[in-house]
Picture 1 (cartoon, protein in one colour):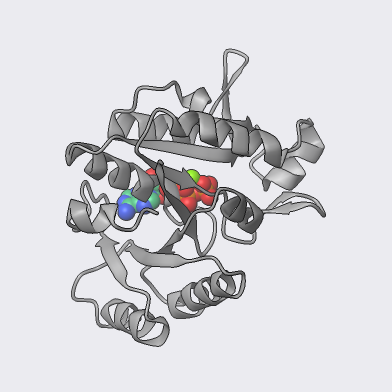
Picture 2: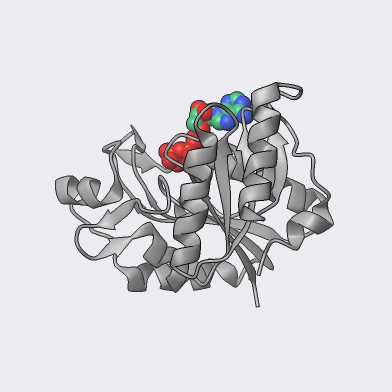
Length: 224
Ligand SMILES: Nc1ncnc2c1ncn2[C@@H]1O[C@H](COP(=O)(O)OP(=O)(O)OP(=O)(O)O)[C@@H](O)[C@H]1O
Ligand SMILES: [Mg+2]
């Protein structure tokens, strides 16, 4: 069965796509057949009448994936707002059955699948019906949390971890983004999150990082 890992974050624009691309690239460079999937993408750019799923196109380019970007995303919206509102503005609301169907189809081509969420774990996907956590559960994935390394991240990261745990979602690790090695506060943020929650910070990414400082075997072990 295809092993899965869901990438969530403490918020939007925290670097899920940026880090996911490096994760998938690392897995593939280590000889693992690793792919990518995203259920709903908002803020897509329109080019020649077509909506371009930017996150998937970015991961495809960086990690060298075969499938067309459109095949790796189920729902694409133009408005740069949460999927629940984007689908109210544009139509085509997310159906969980379509998401699971697409996910299982893309899994047929890969041994490891990295699923990128939209926003954070409580991002609304469809009003009164579906939150990002429901997709995580339906796809039966453990989560890896991307968090910024700086001020405020202890609160945001621990809230996300505790919320996931309260919903019986397994948290396999945290990656701190925009990390400054040697920065007293950021180094302490890392230590504090690990000590308080017991969840390992498996890597830290500096600005414009081209690689993640983690052994491929350790990375592969985060997938379930
Ligand atoms: N370590 C980094 N160094 C340089 N740029 C970065 C880094 N991490 C993220 N970025 C940039 O920050 C912006 C936001 O990152 P990204 O798109 O990965 O966030 P996201 O969490 O995927 O957002 P969304 O919730 O919209 O999917 C992008 O322009 C990305 O290229
Ligand atoms: Mg993204």
